[in-house]
Image 1 (cartoon, protein in one colour):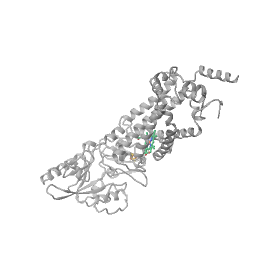
Image 2: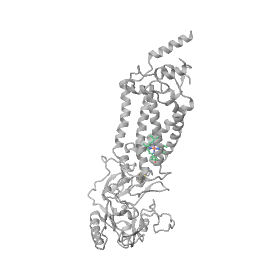
Image 3: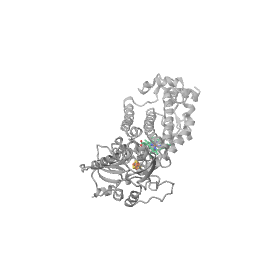
Image 4: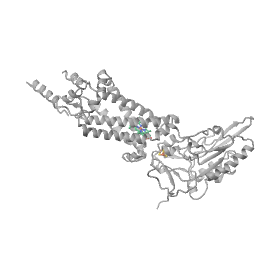
Length: 302
Length: 206
Ligand code: HEM
Ligand code: SF4
């Protein structure tokens, strides 16, 4: 028997009328809580990610900034993004955000993917790419509100953070959480992580960060990777973290009910043609006109 | 093959080859495109050697079709100018569909319906080509909003185009004696006199 998690609540390009195995439905939702205010930008998590997942990105170039690599790639599933911000008092703040897949409750990638089973969502909320089913079309990139998935140029498959679903399956926390030396990344049930965040936010507010708050955007149904931000009122400060992420209306139109309706309409045209033929009969050349032509030919032959 | 030397030549060999190149590429594009369009059609990818091959091949076939279409467009454009008689034909199209074509106005090489089809397909092909290039990730990486727009347009115009081609093909099956024009390029004089009397007069001088 193959190893199956049997807790898949959503599967790309699969009707909810034919659900994937999901008997194990009592699972608690999990979340990774990234406390940006505690992160020191050591990139230990980047290294741990590369180690555990056993992927080695190319050694890039120094672009004159701390971000390295400068962007997520098919082989760098998480990157630290460094932003310099001057607060109202003119003091420098270094806003360091660990970027990567947010594991949305309503994932735009899964909604967009045309390949059955190439993207799945587990009962604990993790959104995972099943790369052997991936066809490399890049629709997930088009659907993602956070610009996370990347197509690998070597094998033309899409990759992103799996939230270490393999580690979670055996009761371990993600490798970035395990490695973080400051405890800026925590992991647990989503409920617990919200409580932890509450405490942190309260603490930050007492220390003068009046706008501190939790980033768990509801436009995508909430996420299973959340941030504690000092400036929760302005998430864009953190290297363009979207303030109100949601699946783009264009993607919703593209992937909405219009497609089954268009499919029915096409079936209607096909059936309509068939029934037109059998009810009205073929449009034959009339015998009358054929006789006219034959008469002309006879006339000409005389 | 000339069945009857008095048959009328409607298409030369090069026009027919051009049309078939478009037809074949369209069928391949529709089959592979539908596979990505809705999961119900995903098994169609097996015709192409699996889903990855379908994803790889589709856009290249699209480029072939776009080029072949461009050529035929310039070949037939001047024959598809709308005239008042075409408008009259269109106003009466319902009778035609009902199988009652006795009082239809006289038509040239193409009737009003065929001309509407020509222009509708040309618009679709343009939309499909532009949007197809926008979403072709193997070669391009356009701005995300453009790609999303491209995805919507490609899917919508694709569905419309498939519907139009179904009508186009059905019309050829329904009107007996038409399909041979695409096989060997000729039609009978009776066919021409019944369906395209203006053209019949023009080529026979009657
Ligand atoms: C120059 C012409 C064309 C280009 C470059 C093109 C390109 C593409 C690309 C890149 C995709 C995404 C899947 C993939 O990566 O293979 C796609 C999907 C598709 N194509 Fe095309 N294509 C073209 C013409 C056509 C035509 C003429 C049709 C007509 C039936 C068509 C129907 C479709 C459909 C239905 C989809 C799926 C759309 C969706 O997922 O919503 N394409 N095309
Ligand atoms: S690239 Fe792969 S995972 Fe992404 S949408 Fe296409 S098939 Fe799905």
